[in-house]
Amino acid sequence: MRRLMIALVLTTVSATAVQAAPAMPKRDAFAAAIAARHDRTVQDLRDWIALPTIAAMGMNVKEGPEYMRKLALDAGFQQAKVIESGGVPAVLAMLDAGAPVTLGIYMMYDVKHYDPAEWSSPPLEGRLVDRPGVGQVIVGRGAVNQKGPQTAFLAALQAFKATGRKLPVNLVLIAEGEEEIASTNLPNVVANPEVAAVLKKTIGIIGASALQNSEGTAGISLGAKGAVEFQLIVGGETSDRYPKADVHSSVHARVESPAWRLVKALDTLVADDGHTPAIDGWFENVQPLTPRQKEIIANGLKGTSEAEAKAAVGVGRWINDEDYQTSSERLVSQPTVNIQGLVSGYMGPGGKTVLPGRAEAKLEFRLVPNMTRAEAEAKLKAHLLKRGFSDVQVVVSGGYGPNQTDETAALVKAQQRTLDKQGIPYRLIVRNAGSWPGAIFNGAPLNLPTGQFGLSRGNGAHAPNEWYLIRSANPKVAGIDEATLAWVDLLYEVAAAGGKKK
Image 1 (cartoon, one colour):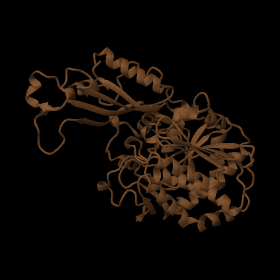
Image 2: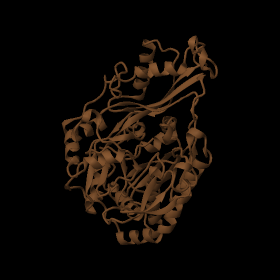
Image 3: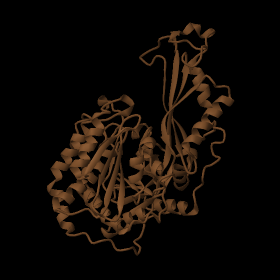
Image 4: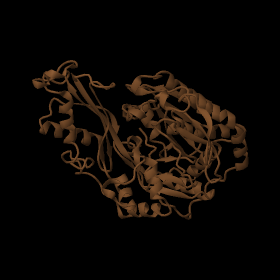
């Protein structure tokens, strides 16, 4: 689940004195090689979009990792293998450039569901269209989350091949096919002795994203909320109080309703305001924002439009009519209990006079430091049992805790140097309101710095008409070629870190 809904809590950072990176030889040659390969890069992205792996549906769970493996080998990784996870397989790839510094790269090759009827063009076509005021974009499921940004990274490696240059860093790539179901089996992959051994050698783990805004200001993410996806189920399968299937609604006079029971259980999870979590002990380990984090948020709001922020999510006011600063602090600091969907009984036109035999709610938690997945799951179950809801089945499908990296980490400083040297303004992101499984690398036993990097922009993750920018109408905003060159720049700056993790 990604994780692309970036917290609107950013601040422009000034250049600081930094360690000089190894000079990039003939940067213009890289730019020329990238431009010459533009059509092939776009076609690579279109081909990848055409092969959706959807873990929740069991779609392309064999084809997806094999395709990812081939993409890695084609980009220049000397080794790439499929790693069994207990679910959808992962891919481990290694590129040994004989360098003193090794960088970890995280990728996802899976995507969210899609309904073609909701799209302006077929979601697997990867159609190139002109977006007014933005430029040429590619429309397709996975375009921005995350196949477009990841294609830019792979194209950067192709540029090294085309120019005959050796990479300034070694690379370890770990790619999973279950990110969109909260990385259910990624911990198993990282615990694999072979995977753990190579990851421990890295300076940190970074994922590809599209972090520029419409004005060209880039983002440097310092963390992300954690996520836990689960279902609450009530019905004949959970208790003999309920029918095994839908029955005539007249029997509700003496037969209990799974739907009403589920509603009652759900109502205990939040306060009467409808949004404040009310699970027993929920805020016990929540770490408040630091003064520095509040400063970052405040500085980041300068020069931005609150009206645009509201329009982006289609609302006219924030919770409690809070001001922009307060609501922005809430966005990154508040753990949430969200209902994604409710499923029960007859959903067609008109009525059907049935008593549903089953009711299910699909929910997710968003977690902040210092909460954990295990804590959240345990507190949910204890909360329900305490209130007599032993007939409400809890099924946790996946999840992980929050991740956080200090702004002084070498991986963060490398991103700052990359943007400083090209004169690109950037902002620190205190914490993504969306999620990615950085905690699995950020926490024990690896304890690695994590982050996300990438120029260009896009929108529509998890929604119809998802798009990623290919050719920008605004020279301050990167298209896919400029995003590719930024990755080349970053690899040289990571090499300058000299193996330091903190």
